[in-house]
Figure 1 (cartoon, rainbow, N blue to C red):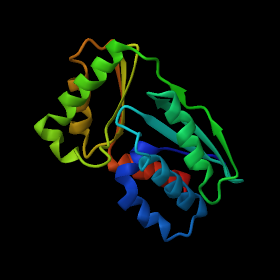
Figure 2 (figure 1 turned 60 degrees about the horizontal axis):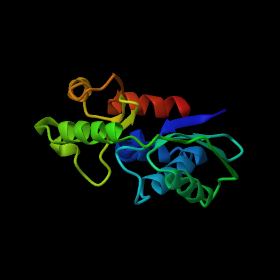
Figure 3 (figure 1 turned 90 degrees about the horizontal axis):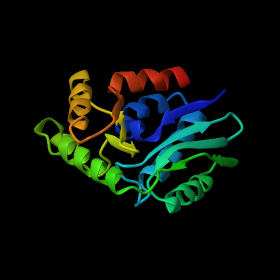
Figure 4 (figure 1 turned 180 degrees about the vertical axis):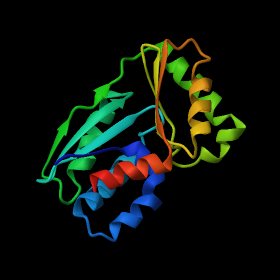
Length: 182
């Protein structure tokens, strides 16, 4: 059975995930350990997204997108060092270098995190990740409410984006996802 959850979504779930830790589920603990390695990586930003898949035998699959080639290999090395990981399959995509995409990233980030409704999200590991490829924007992470999801999406549409895909979840949606995988 495969355990797959977005690492960025789990940033907000640390407190929620601790409720599951009492069950003694080794796979959940392994996920939390891997999540720490990814989120504490100094070059992991709101413009990167890594998803973690864990199989019963400790094989970890990484997918998602990062903005630089070195991040892909660094993240894989960090995950490989976690106790319980037997192998890492690294399918993380490296986003193409584009002046236009960089401009969209920063404008969307300023619009979202500069908005008064999102100020409380500005912290060490902000929960809304903004992935931009060829001016197609994908929002990932966990926000407090449906209103915040819709507001983030509307803010992302302002800057010449071709499309906006809203994959943001509320804590209850993310918790339900964890419970299904537990």
